[in-house]
Length: 163
Image (cartoon, rainbow, N blue to C red; front, side, top):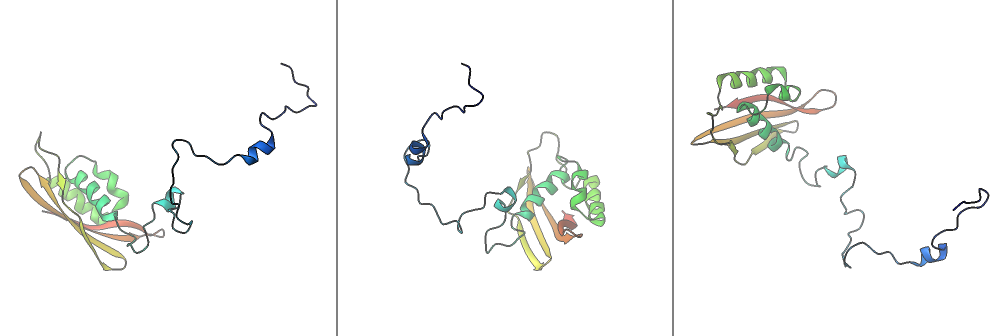
């Protein structure tokens, strides 16, 4: 069907009908309580991951770092992946632990199981944490310290110990 270039196509639904339609969500009819905008979680990815009010800004940081650190110590992850998250002195400590095979697992051994990560903040700019690592019948302890470093204040590991 050819259209005339001077004439706009008529709308499929008249504008009066569009504005008179009630809003319906897809799916079944639901009756939800919607919290006020101030109580809702933000939708932007960076702000959605922000800690809830009353929680420390490093909440979850020590747990995530502990998992990565144990993966490096057991050989499941290359140590170079933690280079930007450690200071030079700490990377030397980490490399020495990896070379010594402190948490090395035998071929076919079970995956390491981490216990709860215990962390505390001895000062406002530091977090010290420790975690128990079960490797088959053996148990190890890993301890580390995180501090904000550099102009951006990125958290970096400044010390690590494993036994």
